[in-house]
Image: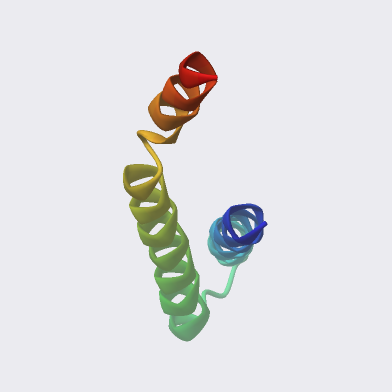
Length: 70
């Protein structure tokens, strides 16, 4: 359950940061602070997501081994 919540949170950060960047880039007046916050949220979400992927990359191997032992 924790993995699913973590991935939802990571996805939320990525989408929110990307939406903030797209919204500010498309407008006439650009607020630098919103652009910076959007980049930070996007990068934070990507960092957390890649760490999660690295941490869980071998989970399917452990599941297959436990199925074979039964």
